[in-house]
Image (tube, rainbow over all chains, first blue to last red; front, side, top):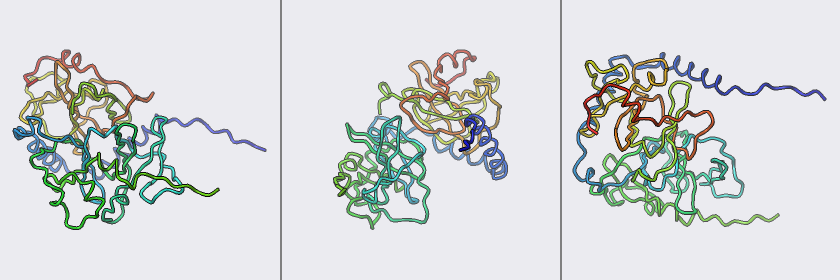
Length: 208
Length: 126
């Protein structure tokens, strides 16, 4: 039998090629210099002002904001162990539909949850779930999928409205796991309740 | 969120290269924004960013790491770091995430006090 010899993969070279492709794409799709300046200046104006006294005094909740089905959600940053690009997702048979699979994170096997399915969130067209936020509370850890990570921010507790102020049509599970709604219709999830959600306790046996 | 006991690294990229800075030093990551040029500033300082009423020097990390210079793009990010002695920011192409340990192909960037000290003093709020 003939064996085919394969050269080792040169990841550095692949990254360089990808960077060159990115640069070429960016050149073709870049906004004009005026548009770029205007975007950067608008952002600078938005963050230049001093934060309101309540936030500066520490009466806020540090959250990681992410986008899912065109809705912005946030989760308490204290429970976020890390954020990664989604790689190597493996299907896991005999699990509920909200378990997208498992990933290997630094040698630890972690279940990855699709919140759209778990919390019965409204679907909105196709989605590209390419990020995973790994939550940890004691021994419990799992990943939740996101389409886009917006970033970390502090939500003033005084402006966090009760979950009744959320979208009028939300499922019971989302309602149970919603801590409140922040300005800009940011749905702040209660990570503690989310991690104790009964549906996450998988206990299914398969006959041999 | 306290920063004193945070473990792990913020992994960021410039071009094809990946770098990591201790999470405990990274105060915030923002989308790239316009900064004010500082007349007469050394070449290692790109300008000053005003964040929440505070003026923070923006260090030219591309120059420091001997990478090709380019203007910030809207798709870039600004990483704000804080040490007990200083506070500074720098532009990166992308922030890949927070990881508990560094990969072999990632370079550690954490000497921010030395970096700032190596440049001429620029007026900023600590």
